Length: 423
Ligand code: AMP
Ligand code: GLY
Image (cartoon, rainbow, N blue to C red; front, side, top):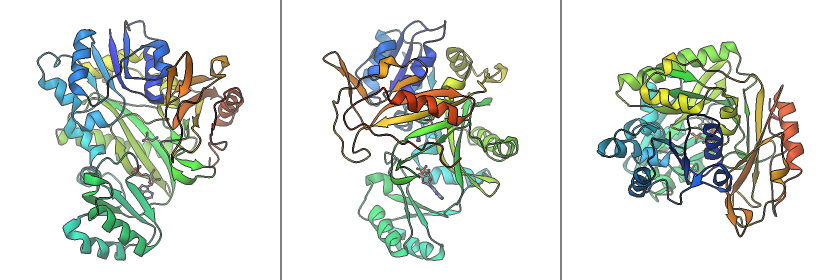
């Protein structure tokens, strides 16, 4: 089977690494990919939203399946684009259709879905420019901190949490009236603040059956002790130590099953990954968000723990035979630490030569923002590389990653030394 992966981060390198182990795989392509995927697959320099060029490549290279890494093309309807095209309709896409991708594409859509299907989440209301005054009144009725969310995709920046009422009102006005996040903040969801510890669960569904994949916890803030600006993710651990049988049973009964049933009831066609961001409030799980894809860097710890042949797993999604698959999970803990460019998540320079990463043999090195230039591997993004290791617990796994990070060098390299500090 010839497979195309869309995307260019650590998530996509990890998926490529995993697919590469399958005897069923013939040729593997990644668009646009990075220096890591270039080692094990053919990179194709096309954007993930350039559907017409993707079509051309799929036909030219005789591609039999497309795995969509990031949310953008899904929210833009790549799955529907394939289904509507006579030349492409038979080619399976791993990722939901546009109507279902709204679970990530619109926070208001996701909230209404959860309300409709009795899925526990924070109380909320939503507002537009013409209901700004009602939004102010709603803020006044809440206790701080105030959680404001741009409805649409805002490159991970659309959630603002503020302690001060006046600042929250100003932010609401700036989102709705001044279009702070453009069209994405034409609607704003204001939510009750939930206090607790976060974790994520991942589900693979074929639209009929589903498999619950390993849990993970990521570390989003740039600074140690979860301080400073939000990033795409600075590290992750799987499994989450506090996700015991009791909590997982609640998550399954109250959240996962109603989500899958809700998709069916609402006629939302879904073949792909569902990433459910959760917060444990007391002993009860509540949903913070749905994503319609895998997480990054969560993929770098979840996928290496899946023992099944990944091509077979995706075939089962395409053929709707997931129910007959038995998932096999590595019992060990996986931990990953993200190396980032100096300055990230603010402004940073690219093109710094990376050395030492090829001398590592007891960790997995997943590239994120890297490229090859004049025979060297250089930085090409904020998040540069994720170093994943296994261990009997997360401390042992992290010990191996940190030891190996000592061998890697590039100018300005930064990483968090306290992944797992809160566990
Ligand atoms: P999101 O983009 O929806 O994942 O939100 C980004 C981050 O904001 C989450 O990972 C949480 O840390 C935080 N967050 C979102 N919603 C809430 C909420 N209702 N209460 C507390 N924290 C939240
Ligand atoms: N690590 C968070 C995300 O992928 O959205």
